[in-house]
Length: 112
Image (cartoon, rainbow, N blue to C red; front, side, top):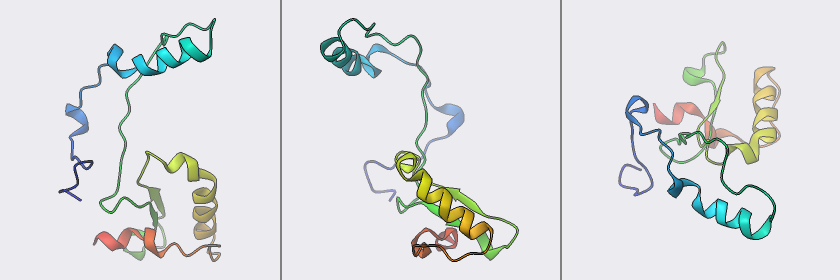
């Protein structure tokens, strides 16, 4: 993925966290057009970083097959849409139940 133009390694301590009108102008224009009467400019804004795994898939499972450790992460850019399903799968993994879906593609050991 390092050759993917959408994949950039960054140091989180060096990320520019400033907000400028360019970051919200389009949304403000849409609010003005479709929600008349609302203040279109944001009252506050905060930057965030999107994390992605190297293969752009979730990371769910037990690193090193350690029964004491269960992780869930990766792809924060769209994981919120899958949060209920991912949470259920992690809960099933945590209590030793079989998951409803095959999650081998999310195994954190695929990167070892």
